[in-house]
Image: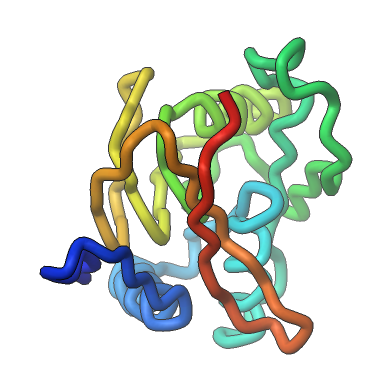
Length: 173
């Protein structure tokens, strides 16, 4: 796990280094039976990179738009549609997301997965677990764990060359 809190108090997160750490952690548990699915958008970006890196045939994308419990506050976001090019029933799925915060996105993703069938297991891997859980959700794999105040938002960005970076900004109330 990567320590990401420098002594000066500034937040220094190298998204590319964290992605490499996460990829190594996932590689240790990867089996031919393990199916990868990423939550739009950050998790889906990471799954696409792993697919290219490892030459995987079928990886999934999960949209949480229809299962959000904050729909009235957020509205309908324009996101990719769920695509699961593998049989969900009985599958062992590794769900990827960029930042784990309240747990609400993961709850929505699980609901979406179960709309497609009943998997044997679902595990969670994230780049950053930032604390602040509102639901009993925990990452099986996290490249970094840190605490951010609720007044800050951390988002994964993808450049045109596919490289990752983070943006830290004040969160919306």
